[in-house]
Structure formats: structure tokens, C-alpha cells
Image 1: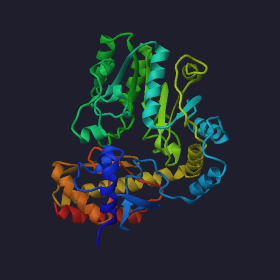
Image 2: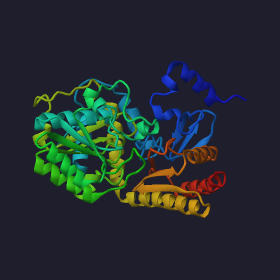
Image 3: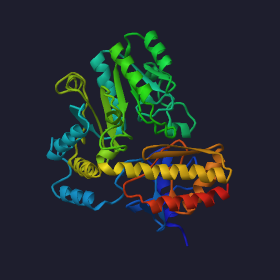
Image 4: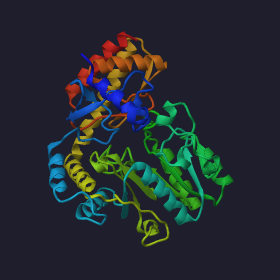
Length: 414
């Protein structure tokens, strides 16, 4: 019997570059053909051959409520009946902005866009326009989307492909991007001394998610806040992954830090394409039509996406006391993987923070064998050691126990 997944992927390769629309999906790191997903429900996804998997990718963290949640789907169906897009401000757009402000009070004004990349790119432009400076400081192995000037020593897909930047990006585009190692506050101070009065902003993921999980370092983040304030630069938190992942709001709000701008995405769209950036009125009012920093998009504020995001955040607000359970499940899984690996004498690192975790082996071949074996047992992890994995509110203790049981068998085959 021929595999429906195989047939579809062979067809995809005829028309899509590499058979995919985003590189990591090609499974180049783990080898073999990728899994093509037909549907999902709750914590499970199903391929075109009818195989079921416990899903820890969750559309790269976006599907925090799980798949095909009834109330989100019902809201979308109702909204679609009124039309798809009009290129104007709409009620769901205003309501989504309002609920984000309620959850993150320092976001006085917000601008919706269509992706995390677009949010970061626009926030950096705004920071440069507001400060009238050119330089941006980022951190090694951080990933802030695919804008040319930020594809420098990035993590995630670029780390997986073992390239420091991308072909097609002129060196001249990178001259205003400074890169330092994460966590070295003294080096950051030195860079600010060297480029005094020239740095527009520092951009950082408060919890790294693109070189494996890099746990929260509150002291470092507080240090960045002081340095940027003293220098007249802006601090930008890239919370495209972390926004509404650790609680009903941002990591910044949770740990008591107020960045100048925050970028959001993924979860706030309820599984549909979205990005957003926001901050104080003083900064945000520099955007057109009120200010001289231009940014526009045909599909920004699309009412279908806004409705999905609004219904998702309403559901998360009701579930906000359940984030602790989600974190406990992730801890149970991460510590369980560490324990079993130790018993089986398999060397690996499992990092976790809240409901995010990542797995790295000492040897790439070990991860490849582990990954394929877990797939065979119905567990779907991110197909790279450099990507983060996630839990959703739909995951259960049984899911975790089944995953650990599968891991025990997989470790035996390494």
C-alpha cells in the first residue's frame, strides 16, 4: 500500500521549493521525509495515512489551546459569514487591542501586522525613527524573524542549516546590527561605551526559543533596562513566542520589567497569521498617520484573524489560573526525560522554562535516531534540536506518561 503522505510530499516537491514553505519543515536535520499533517484535535495531530501523534510543535507554539477547539472554531465560522477582509478598522480589531492592553497595561497603543517578522522589522524601524539613531544590538543565537538586517548569527533554522546568515543579504545591510553573547552584561556596557549615542535599541527574547530553550535571566534583563534608559536607547522585547505563553500577558509584565516596545505574535492570532508591536503613546504616536515612521499592510487587522485572536485571549483569560498546571506538565516531562536518559546512560540536555522545553543530544545522530523512533511511536517533537517544543492546555498527564514511555523505548535503541 502506497503512503498518502509520500504521494502528497512528492507532489509538493514539484511545486513548492523543497516541498515546503519554511525550511525546518523539510526535516533536513532529522533526515527522511517530513510528516504532513491533515488535521488536529486537542493535543493530537493526524497525518494523511491516519497516524496519530501527540503534538509538541503546536504550530511552533501558536496553538496554546490545542487544535480545533470548539468555541474558537464557532467564532470563526460566524465571523466568516460576514466577509473576509475590508481594509478598514473593525470591531474585533479594536476589542483585541483592548484585551491586550488590559493584560499588558504598558502597551498603551498597538499596531497589528501579519507576522512576527513584520512586527519586529516595524518595531526596529520605529525605534530608529524615534531615537534618530541607526544601530541595533541583538544577541548571538537569537532569532527575530527573517528581515535582512537581523539574519546575523541567528538561531533556529539558521543554526540548523549551519549558516551564520543568509545568501542574498548584502554585508551593507548588516553594518548597523551589533551582536554580543547573551548574558554578558559587562560586554553590553562596553559596546554602549564604544558606540555612545549611536544605538537606537536593544532587542531580546526574554526566554530564548530558537537555539533550544534559553531560560529566563531576570538580572540580565534588568541590567539591559538600566543601560538602555541611561543611554537614551529603547529596549525591545521580542515576545512573539513568549507572549501569553507563561501567563495571561507577557514575560515582561510577569517579571516586573517594562520594555519600551514589545513584539507579539503566534498565540494572539489563535493559530492564524498575526504579529503586533506596541508600547507607550509617546513612542507609538511616531507611527503614520500620526508621525513620520511609515508602516502599512493590506491585511493588517484582518477581521477573521482578529476574531480568532480575541476568542483565544478570552479563553486564556478564563484559564489564567491553569497556567501553573501547564508548567507542571512541562516540568514533569522535562525531568522525566532527564531521569530516563540518566538511567539508560544517554547523554543529553533537556532545558525547560514554563511550558517550553528543548532536547539536545551530545551527538546529532543520536537525536535523529531518537526523533524517528518517537515518530514511530506517535510523538511529534520539533524536527531540530535548535527549535523549542511546547505544551498546550489540551495536553493531559496521560499524554506526558505516554511520551515518557515512548522515550524509554527510544533511548534503548540509541
